Length: 267
Length: 267
DNA sequence: CTAGATTGTCTCTTACACAAGACACATGTA
DNA sequence: TACATGTGTCTTGTGTAAGAGACAATCTAG
Image (cartoon, chains in turn red, orange, brown, cyan):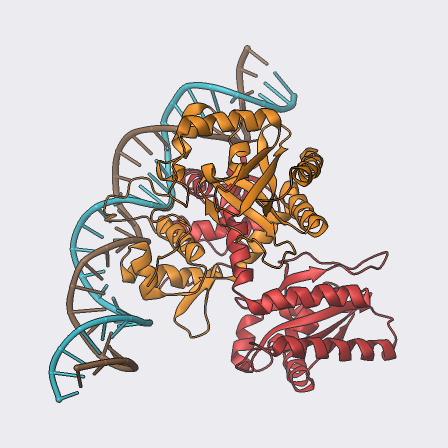
């Protein structure tokens, strides 16, 4: 087959090694890229820019966008020549929530947690091999630490990432984690072996804490939610200031684990 | 088997206009049909049934579904050979909400309304020429009247429909409303002219009430939300028992209009 | 004013995605 | 046992959708 699915956002594909000239792409793939691009940019985009953004011929994008707008997956934005997500996608998304007990209850639980503790709380899942914040609830601190829903972060940067990978073969993990993923935002570099060991300990412990990984001021506490099959299907986590006392951290972890366990009881 | 859906969610068709025994369909269109079909059925569907449902060759559906699952727009459901909407669609849907002030505030307002009044409240919009319940909040009656989000109902059956069409040309309205749409669930038949007159009066009055249209026990109160351009962009409505007193109905309408007006003030 | 960039629509060609259909492997049921 | 029904993977041909490019309109500088 071809290069399989080169569908990984590719916001800016560093060197120009990819894209072997004008290979003809399937329309559906173009569409998937369009959606990813809009998701990555979080705003309405002009059709011309869209074509540039997904690196596709203008004429193609015009026709595809027309189809998508007609179908309601996209909508023309205010000024008239920009597009963004449409109502249909919202409706399908709500269908997903409705059909997905875990997500529905998880959202609820996360909202509760952040209200009760005052800290930012998040529901996280693996999304085609990437760590994804599926739902987050801001917390009540004056300077609150928040992250956008749908944000995708390299697995090694997070506590949840360590839990989500528990139970996977080493080879699979190596496959999911790129070299770049091991470089933290501040430039420090994790060793793959250390990361894999973290995963094992996190899986065994049933929770995970990371300090100062994505930024220097926060600590991340996470607990796993299990599927009926016993796999880690999601995590819930709390983002707290890095100087939170040992004692309070312990309490929060206990709380988190209890809630995660409750979520694991699938109907 | 399938079907038997009393509330006609649309018997057939999708974004395609002329469906002459589709010999060779574009992949993207197949996908759009798949999504519509899943939305109409509100549950995971086996790939074989899916192929039947959208009237497409199995081999095609297999490849398309694989692409969609890889991309995360669909997910394999529990037993392993059924598919339903995936996380990506949820994320895109949330992006839509985030990018859409009206929807975000409208949902909020509808939730407030149903909590304050105890009645079922809904946010409604036109979705490619069809009336759509975009968000609904159940109300607190013992036997509550509720409708599923994303349900599409013929425009003439509803109070909101009359408001949403205010300002459209007669020809456009005629185009949007099919013969079948004029037949109420109980078999009664509306006259197109009456309906169009209703639209005019509703538009002029700035609210609309219908009694016993979709069923014999409810009254529907609706008020329009205007876009900056002065067009009716959405409605919020309350579904109340048909024997609600004139006085209370009047109060609710006043409340509804006030809230709708507040929503109309776009930033 | 001209020169350049951008937008939306069109036409034509050909590479390839859709479709048909064969296959192996499960099931269930008479 | 045979016999139907369903599932998932292949291969192969051809109708057509993706892409190149030309076009007029519309901006926006300078």
